[in-house]
Amino acid sequence: MSEHPFVFLGAVSLLLGLAAGFIMHRSDFCIAGIFRDLFLFRRTVMMRSFVLLVVATMALFEAARLFGLLSAYPFPLLYAPSAANLIGGLLFGIGMVLAGGCVVGTLYKVGAGSALSMTALAGLIIGSGLYAEFHPAWAAFVKRTTLFPGKVTIAQIMGVDPFIVVLVVFIPASLLLLSWRRRGAFTHQAFAAGYLQPSRAALLLALISAASYVLVGMPLGVTSSFTKAAGLVESVILDRHYETLAFYKAMPLNFIHRLTGPEPLIGGVGPSYDTLAAIQLPLILGIMAGSAGSALLLGEFRFTWRVPARQYALAAGGGIIMGLASRIAPTCNVWHLMGGLPLLAASSILFLIGISGGAWLGGLLLLRLLGVGCGKAADGLCAPRRHGA
Amino acid sequence: METIEIDMRGQLCPATLLVALKEINARASLLRKGAVKLCFLIDNRDATGTIPESASNMGYAVTVAKQPEGWYRIEVAVRT
Image 1 (cartoon, chains in turn orange, purple):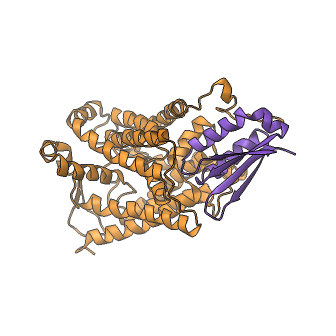
Image 2: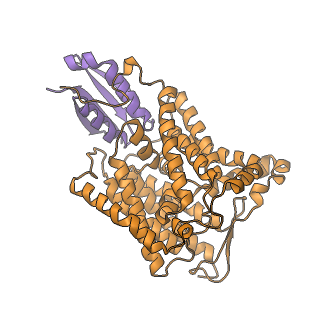
Image 3: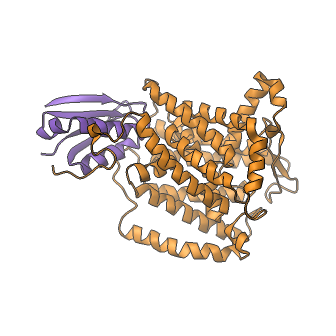
């Protein structure tokens, strides 16, 4: 295994991606939708499954840590909290609502044939590239606003055993989840064929996330590859300018993974085939192929491009904002919400606050931009009320 | 009863739900009188859950039927 770490990491990521794409398509487990609909329609059913996802992942990560299965705790590329997490999260929230899906949601929708999500994906790559233009200034801002340098998780900041902090959160959270379960508050009526209830999807995605942490050394992440794609394009068409951008030359990933031998795994956001590319590219392909497979099995794979032009503009604009935000934050919602938050990383908690505010603002913006605002003509639109039949 | 068809295939959430709600609200009086029914053509799986939920909360009868070509037809009409 140690001779070909990229083969092992790539094969595992491909399998995890296939499973995640299939599950997300069947359950429409769209993180952008979960946050957006909570504010826009006061729809809470999906948010409950999201809480289940975070709590289940937290328990699995902690179990993996206690059994000594983790190569690094916290995992690599998770930093001390700074104002960047909050600002990046806010921008990310706005972008994902406008784009109609987060970074992973966009991928599974591309897999099912959505032309709008393909546009958002192009926007994500462009936005990631734009960040390179002001990376040095932003890096300096991050440094200035970092709280608790060198400390990532709440447990590290408090100087206590992670088990204690996890337990303090896990016990009340489990009681809340159990009370929701007793009320049947996880289930909602769905008419889509082959529908997977989001609470089941949440448990399966928690397993996938934990499997990734144990086997690949880190949880699911995809946005470094979007930056790599931007760097690749820039290095070809703007080669002289590309050479001046320090951002693409940094190699922030450097860790030893217990399953791939003593050689450190190294990677960055420049367009080279390094560890990040070896993990993320198969994961991205897997998510798209898993979703496409699910859609094909249901006879629902469709490529429809005749959509109002305004929605293409929203998808592109949202994608660009989200791509930019994923570097500002740094990293995206799956990394923070399905990876960092279950470890109770302070940066991920700040990102959660930011993304919540961003989803709320994005919803308000979307109402205006789609021309379906809460005017008199659309009475009842913003909070559908129960009328007599 | 006149059927008004609104084709939203290819569109994503929440545009599909927002447009559907706007159409329902704009024709609320005709819908309640039973003069029209609205038929939304959708290929976004999420909307097959959210549109029926919202329309039925607003007091309408909703039916969802998957079409052989892989998209869904959601009909909204007065409750009988």
